[in-house]
Length: 324
Image 1: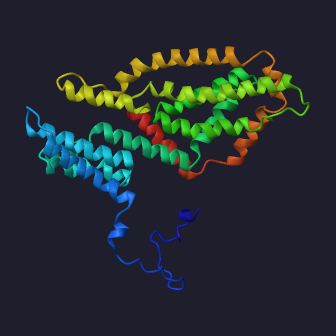
Image 2: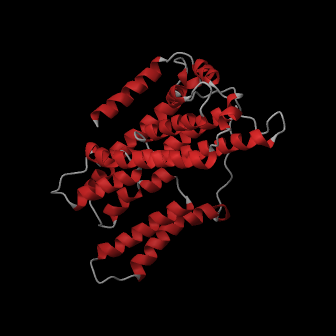
Image 3: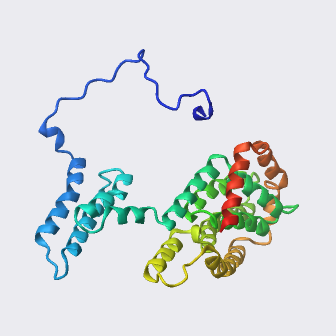
């Protein structure tokens, strides 16, 4: 890509040879009467109405908190302003309405749990950028694929890869990354067999359903194992820390020893159920003509040797897992 070239400028360069953009239209009140501007004003208007018309028996900060919540909710619902601006609106609204100090709000934005989640998303972007997830999926699936192909073990390889990756990053991001890997394997399977017989089409279609359902459910199951696997776990850890400051906080190891055995049992139950529902005895013969180890090795050879960036991403990934 262009940004991979070291000679490419990081900042846009003004090209005087290109024609300049046309001048903006003249200002008028009619041009301001748009739906977007109305949605932008809806937040402050709701806040003003609540502050003027709603009364609480308690302190005024409770009423102000409700007003600010309505303001942010209106912007969030209508997307009148970009989401990043809406997300940091409490940073200036809370001090403005006397709800909390700017220092306290800023500390909440840079809480340990928020920083941990931010680092996980950065790692997700790096893994996706350099196709580390695809290489990992192909290597693990290649180990599980028998000769001839064994649909139950191939399904186990795809689902276990998804669950493992989901342990270290957000389960939604993991599902988004792993679904193209799974569908890439399924694309080698024909929609309609060449012989025109539905006897071979039914096992192939059932295997495709099992893979899609397996990836979909394996991602949240793997996310149960670690704190970073899903945002709900991080929210629970933050609530525990704020509600019980004297108690021992929920660490990564504490949650792992609690969540991993439970997630493992649920994962095995998922695999057994998918095998019983969608993988019949004749599925191995139906898939053997279209999918084997040679196909997976060919996909792995297309990726080529590991680049320096992939090795660095794996190194950061390993350090992150080690420091847990």
